[in-house]
Image 1 (cartoon, one colour):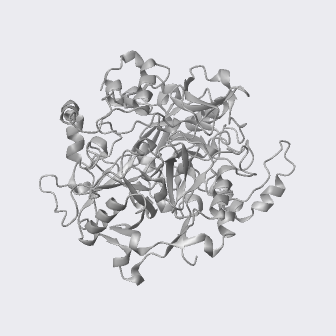
Image 2 (cartoon, rainbow over the protein chains, first blue to last red):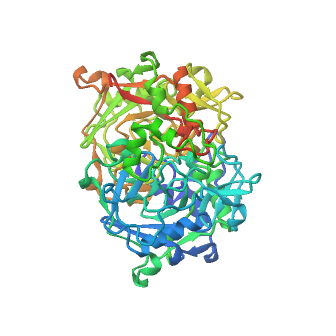
Image 3 (cartoon, rainbow over the protein chains, first blue to last red):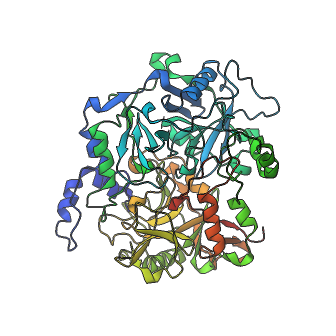
Amino acid sequence: MSATTIPHRRAAALLALSFISCIVAAHAADAKPALAAKPTLSDVIKASAPSDWRPLDPSRTLYMELPAGRVVIELAPAFAPQTVANIETLVREHYFDGLAVIRSQDNFVAQWGDADEAHPKSLGTAKEKVAAEFTVPMSAAQHFVRQRDSDGYAPQIGHADGMPAGRDPKTRTTWLAHCYGMVGVGRDNDSDSGNGSGLYAVTGHGPRQLDRNITLVGRVVSGMDLLSTLPRGTGPLGFYEKPEQYTPIKTLRLAADVPEAERSQLEVMRTDSATYTAAVEAQRNRGGPWTKVAAGYIDLCNAPIPVRQIGK
Amino acid sequence: MSATTIPHRRAAALLALSFISCIVAAHAADAKPALAAKPTLSDVIKASAPSDWRPLDPSRTLYMELPAGRVVIELAPAFAPQTVANIETLVREHYFDGLAVIRSQDNFVAQWGDADEAHPKSLGTAKEKVAAEFTVPMSAAQHFVRQRDSDGYAPQIGHADGMPAGRDPKTRTTWLAHCYGMVGVGRDNDSDSGNGSGLYAVTGHGPRQLDRNITLVGRVVSGMDLLSTLPRGTGPLGFYEKPEQYTPIKTLRLAADVPEAERSQLEVMRTDSATYTAAVEAQRNRGGPWTKVAAGYIDLCNAPIPVRQIGK
């Protein structure tokens, strides 16, 4: 039983996690032919080699400290070099410290930045306008590994550097995909009106219609629940209506600027490893005994990107 | 600007909602050809006729009363007649009252039922085992309207009676699809081991691999945020580890058994109406000025199913 089944009760879940082989044996006499047991995602992770994982690079990792804990965001400079550079400027100049999560729309996004529209906080030396980075040349995504499943939003899909992505061989462009946990840059109608001072994370079913319409800059790799469980805002688009409903941002720092002893020790499975391909396959075609029909398909946003504590 | 864009700031969102025509005019001089303005989902809803909506049927609507408010679930007896009947028996005999939400797994499900595995609550006159209703004959979904988008999980997709569904013309079967807010029945390894005493709602990216593997019985039409914002459980599969972390269920009632004055007054857009087709199209191919690239596609789980207060 993988972490994505629905056991009737908790005891069954624990039993299945502990004694899956016994359950397989117990059901061998079932009348209906069962799916053969197959390695689960958990099995693939257990069998992985240390070289299948990479630690987060402190120079491209953000820590957003909320009252309830730390949200860790891996940046994707290959897909948004100018925007990521602008965000790094904002972060290094402590732009976000003291600002807040100001929006939480159910099944869509949580958004943070400056709520004070009458007297906006200075952007310091960061740029007010950054050119749209909705797509980049395919050559920018050097470690793109294609996922073989069809997709309605992109001619091709896959992963590059731990991020879900789409690409189009005709236009020779590639782009990050709006899956759960992806982080992007709010903008107004002009394509260059986003500068990274207003950011959001996807907290619902992947709003893939936003792909190629907005600059995505990274992915939440830890602490996602701190954003996804925020009370929903009751104003238009899920903005909070009262300042006391905001969740304050204590600090937002580049990991490289945080003392080493205080850094999160996380590693991400390399999405260009054979083990990652096996991980996706384990989710695409699940074996018995819980699963009765293997999907034979996996949506880009359902392909897991494993993250774990280093040394655990 | 629709409810599913990411404005840079709240003021821009409100501005766009109020004066969208002004913004269109202001951008007419942009160098890059913009997408023509098109009716948004909001426009389609505003232009709808009363006959495009149907009130919830009290005999197939559940109210789950949590401390923070009411979760309204529309049942889908056409897709799971036996299981829905068993749930109605459980509800009428007050089985769920005093039980709790015992699991919340990020980007997956919230689950409720009996946490006491040593001394499980009596099912009363409800059945212990109910045959799997993972699929039903296509003829059961009389109001199925096909959505023209391709889908990796089902040969055909569409909606029937306000529920997202897949179907297979070869096997002549149809089934409900695991989209955000859908409600299903936990089970153990045996297909008939679910009886409706343990239920879950999808709170993350649609886990469509569960389609045809588990009995879905309905959809949350109001109060979804009461489930989606619950703190995540820290035990295996997101089960809570301590009883004090549970969210108690005050009562779970059939709307028909609640005094009329206390009922939620909700109506759902008829998914077999031309207006609904227009609503989906508005989301599939969005117009300018915020949108720069229309997706030309919509995932089954991104097709909205509008619900509103009657008379508002």
